[in-house]
Amino acid sequence: MAMHLSMTDARSTDEFIKGLWRENPVFVQALGMCPVLAVSNTARNALAMGLATLFVLLMSNIVVSTLRAFIPKQVRIATYILVIATFVTVVDYAIQAISLDLHKALGAFISLIVVNCLILGRAEAFASKNTVTRSILDGLGMGIGFTFALLCLGAVREILGNGALFGVQLFHDGFQDWVVMILPSGGFFSLAAWLLVFNAVKQRRARHASADVEVAR
Amino acid sequence: MSGDPLWSIFVNACLINNFVLAYFLGICPFLGVSGKLATAARMGGAVTFVMLVSSTCAYGINQLLIAIDAPYLRLISFIAVIASTVQLVEMFIKKVSPALFRTLGIFLPLITTNCAILGLALFQTNKGYDFAQCIVYALGAGVGFTLALVLMAGLREKLELASVPDVVRGTALTLTLAGLLSIAFMGFAGLGG
Image 1 (cartoon, rainbow over the protein chains, first blue to last red):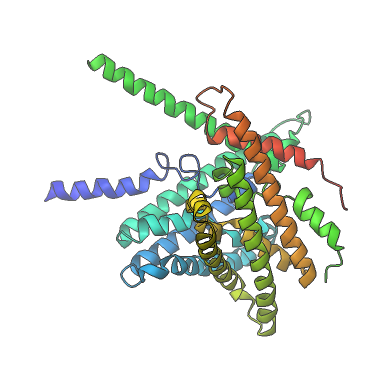
Image 2 (image 1 turned 90 degrees about the vertical axis):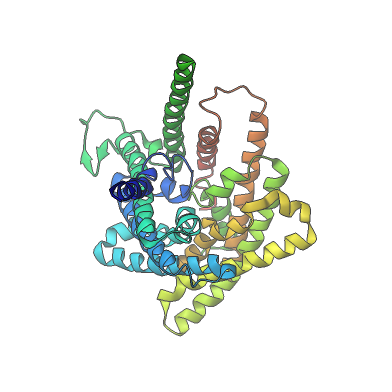
């Protein structure tokens, strides 16, 4: 019995951990790229966007997995989108109430969380088939992984483009701002650079693994 | 409300603030379908059509929502309209050209979650465009999307023949290319005022 329990525990922590690194939505699955590129020009915007997406993802996962027995197969995608759109409207009004500056900076991209493929993807691929607890863990993991990726990108772009992090100046006056990093093209370049890092790590690991097999032989 | 002349709206949506390269809308199909020139052009056509129809519907719905004073329903009704338009286009393409239907594959239903289309509906509402301006804006955005997709597909077809290190292959290379294209499009800034 104890063993059985620990086994299910291990599996449910795995639902949480897989989204952080191994199946990271941005770096590995390349989902939800539009907001990643668009609002990652400063670390603050990136963090806000990440948290907003995390909330919507978590809530839609909860609702979809709770209702999974009642949603007819034929109209499931439309239902998911309506559920997601409802929570996005909530987030939109909440951010407007908390910080008007932030709402202006993020602009239409808050509403565009609706069409973030990541959220619909998790609803269809995970929440519609799993229990509420597992869906919560999955939503948390994927959401935090997404926020982490956004922060990686936002931090690099703000440091290079503004010489600051979260609005705190990091360098002396002599620092020449790398303006292109703040501009749209900088988003493409920094995401490409992060993907290169990920690819390099992955290939290195694969090489090591195959070398181990050779040694074992 | 907004007094921009039509040609300036068109140039703005198509070149200066290109939806893909300046607003990052519609990146998924941009990366996914830009492998082949012919497919890219047809995908561009389909997206432009959906944009025109959904922009028209979004304009009508917005007027209605203003009339009944329920702006909080905007997002939900926009997305519902877009989803049904995409369904229509899907059935139409399936009937007219099954070959095209197969090549577009999963990316056809995914037009629903193409941010460019919902983005268009939201932007035109925020900018307060009237009906003619909405149509021109949608047309400009669609042409701009097609242009970016076709340029990208052309570049990638050539790149297939180049020898690139293994680490760079795939999305990273495509994104770098997109960044360079985006820099090129910055050259249009100031055009059309």
